[in-house]
Image 1 (cartoon, rainbow, N blue to C red):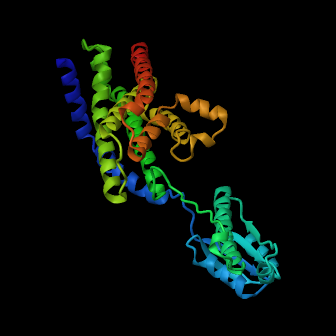
Image 2 (image 1 turned 135 degrees about the horizontal axis):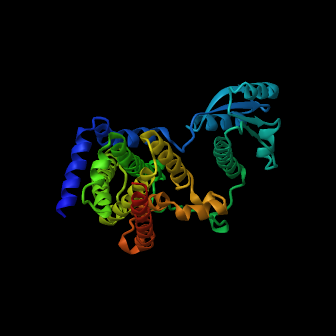
Image 3 (image 1 turned 120 degrees about the vertical axis):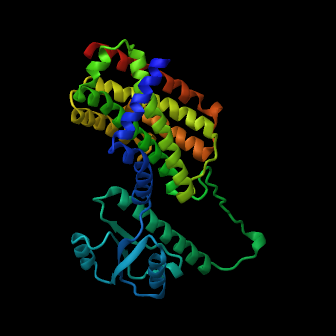
Length: 372
């Protein structure tokens, strides 16, 4: 125990004396949470809209006003020339085109079918799809209101009404920040844990201090524990810092058991730190360690459900996520913070993460013995 205490003292002194590391520990959590939460926005607003109004009626103008009043669209062109709409789309001056046909008002008043053309620049398929859905929803609401106003009035006792009562569970405001910020917190501790750990042993090797450690009677497990614990504490501190900042600035809900969350985060950090140490045992330089670590972290994050739902991935990719510890951390953060989950709900995640901890740290210790 005395040996581990001395190793921990040495590691903390190295961290404090490293001027480049302190900003990473204390500034990076706040900067990353703030910048990414505002910049990475799933909502799509201010789509540039060209309306080709061939009807030029009161009804077509009402529809135009309804679209323009939405924060989703900005009507940048309003005319009756379809060829200009194509030119503007070609020149990337508009994102969508809506063409209202001749006889639009007449058909609606007489309860006849009519068609409205929707066109979108689909280079960004997500943006085009969401924009089409927004426009279709606004047009559908407009159509319903017009139909109801045009229908003859009948006694209420002879008519039935279908009323929809929607309820959004666990995220009533449907805030994208509530969904995205937990993912950012997972990114935060993943990057800090893997990067710092992977650079640590390599830095010792480059400075020549690892040879001094190798000639001392320090056991492998003492060496690994001495390397893991300081960054484990830093990772948990950064998670608490990012969580507090997100709660204060974004009002992130904390519905679940925070002890369960930090217990799982502790396990996750042990797994990620073990992975970082494993990478550092066969890297020759800090640059090599950083590039290898970044390669794996990129794969882990993109396939971890941070940015896109795992359920929307191909089946083979969903199978690969079973081997991705980041995917479990992202799920647990969202389950605890938004759904209010606790230890009882999370035990399968604890079980799987324990397997990662044992496997990755065993690899790190075995590989350290072979290469030093």
